[in-house]
Each structure stands twice: as C-alpha cells, then as structure tokens.
Length: 522
View (cartoon, rainbow, N blue to C red):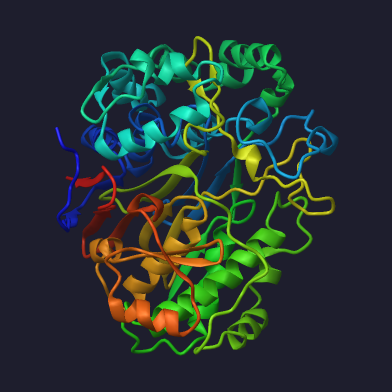
C-alpha cells in the first residue's frame, strides 16, 4: 500500500464542550474515554499521555520528562516534571566537546511517571489506575502503527539498534514496523500495571527502580537507587509576556519557553499592525525576534539553581525595548548562537465542560531517547542529558543532581487573567519558533486555531531559514532580499501543534495536519 498523501488536506477544527487534541488518534480517544467516565481535563490529559508512551514510542516513553500548565478553574499553575542527572555525573566524566546522545551517559532520571502521580493526586477525579486502562489494553493487545510514526521509527534504527534492549523491544522481525502493521510491545503492559498499582512507587522506590539500577550497573552507567529516590516534580509559577492584548504563559527554566517569550516581547515592540501573516515583512520580524530569543536561551537557560540571571532579568521591559530597537526591518542579522537541533516529543491539550484546561508535554528528547530499554520492563530511557554542555563556566555545564536545559515547553494564553487557550508545538528548537508563529497568527492576524496550524511554517537553524514548500513565493523573495539564506525542510521537521481555544460555552480544538493525530470532543 502507498502511504504517501500527495494532495493538500485541511482539517476542520472540533467544536465541543470537552476536548482532547494530540498526535495519535488512539491516545486522543484514551483521554476522551476518561471524560466519558466523568473524569476531568487532568484525567483526560494523563490517560492520553500514558497511552502515548505505547502508541507513539518514537517520541516518548516510560522514561520521559514532562511539563504541564493547568487552569484549574480559578488559577494557572505549572509543574516541572523533568529529571535530574545522577549524582555521579561530575564534569570530569564528560571530557569530550559534546555530550553523548546514546547510552546511559545520556539518560537523566525519568520524571514523567512522578508528574502523572503528582497531577492526579492534586486534581484527578478518577482513580489513578483507571487512567492506565486504555494504555494497558493497547500494550497487551497491540495496535496498528500510524503512518508518520512508522516513518520516524525507521529513521532511528541505524542509530539505536545496538543499544541494550532496543531491538528486542522495538524491532520485531529485526526491523521497524511498517505503517498499518500490528505491533505488540513486550513487557509494557505489566510495567504499566505495576506503576498504576503502586502509584509510581515501584519506579522510584521499588522493583522497577531496582531493574533500572541493575541495568545501569551492567552497562557501566552511574544511576543509583538514591538518584531515583531523590526525584520529585516541582510546582512552579509560569512566566509571561504581554502580546497583542493577551498574556502568553510558559513554564520557567530549565525549559526554553523563555525563548518564545523574549521573541514575542520583541515582536510586540515592532511595527506589526496590519502586516499580513504571510508577508515577508511579518516573517522577517518574527525570524529576527526568534534569533535573539534563541541566543538568550542558549546562553543563559539551565537548572534555575545555577543560572546567573533570572527570568525577570531576561524579560525586563527595558531590555526587550533595547532588543526590539536592534531589529532592522530591511536586513537579516547574524546571531552568535544557534538554536539546538531537533528532537522527538509529544504534546497534548485537554479541556472539560467545567472550565479546566491542561497544556501538557512529554518527551524522551531524541527519537526513542538514548536507545536503552531496561530489560524485562519496556522502559525506554530519555537522552535529555545530551542537552547539557561541557563548557567550563557555562550555567548549563553537566554536573551532579542537576536539571539540564530542556527543550519541551507547554504554552498557555490568558486575557484579563482568564483562560484563552492551551497550546504547544513540539519538536526541539522548533518549539519556541512554533509558539511564536501560531500565537502571532491567532492573536495578531485573527486566524482560527486550525488555520494557524495548517499555515506554512519556517524554522531557523544553522544560519538558514528553512521554509515549507507551501510558503508563498513573494514571502520567499522578500526574505531573500533582506539577506536571509533560505533552505528546504521536511514537514516532519516543522513540529506538531495542538491547540484548544475557549469559544463561547465550549472550545475549538485543532490538531497538527502534518502528523497522525486528531482533535476529539464530546
């Protein structure tokens, strides 16, 4: 069967009083099932996230990190569920110019399971074990692999096939499964059941944790039982800038959401009134603002205990004024820093009829993370440690018990302290770039969420502006005339957006048209 889709396709948004939007239809339905059972948006988000570890294993897993922003009906709160480095990760252990991307020297403590427990305990309406039922069913019975996920899966084989447990878990018949092929992951159903029964304790204080420590020791890793037991998720206060009459909210460092906020703060101070969204003038200003935000993030963002500046310093209005004045409308700049490379992530949004809204993101960083799958468990570990640097004196230098720079960022929009939208655009350095683009389209140009997602995108990196094929010729020519170096890009490298926007007594939910997912509602 030919799995190509050569013709333009524009999805319609879903309008409903309860919604879930994510990158894989089976996972979206898992969240919807919780809403059918009387659960709330947090229950729906968690069931979706748990199911995604099974049906979209290329982008997240049981060894992931997670972040969330929640409108609980009265206030906006955020959770940092990212893991720290093992205590044995001293700088001397990492002498090379680059951090490893595969193996135990790339894996930080898994944080997502702890985040699930923390969110459920504070906000969940359904029993914790009920949230696992769809995922356990997909794991025990298997599922049919989605087309885009199959493409990403195949690309990871040569990089990871020799890592412990990877081939046994993710390469049935010695290869990646093809689109439409039935895949039944070994061990995940039992592991999910144990996490559900013990409310995550088994991973951080019990048998599953023991399996991680044993596997690490066997491969020369430094993960210990004490490292797992010390992990906790942290409630944090979202940071923000004002933009187009709204307030854009992000989780604070160690995440890179501040890059999006700096860029939006700069763009707010530029003359963008009346500029069409696909005009070279608007795109140029977005790109220039993004360069400055990305430079700041790469220079300053780290574990907040090690940062030399605060988010308030970086978002100071006078500083944003100065940055905006440095942007020239007629020529491209050459920044001294480059955004980080691409990564693999899942993002989801959920909202319920009582007004609760959730913006949630979960990731193993690189596709399948570091490639290690803990024997007998199906736990695929992240490679978030690759986001540390080895540069002496840098706040993000690798070290013990430290959170690395983290690319994953859930977004949220409010107006007059009331919720407007939960949104996110997954994909490494594309994430702040995607936040900038979809927020501009919705709030400046008035585009509906699905149009804002379907619109042509650009991605800056390696000194080039990578343009989607559908970008208008006039926009390309105008950017080239300003000195931007243009390059082609695959739609798979332009991130994946999900948006749920409040509308009347319900919501408008939209899902990424470049991926397998969907928005659903009731």
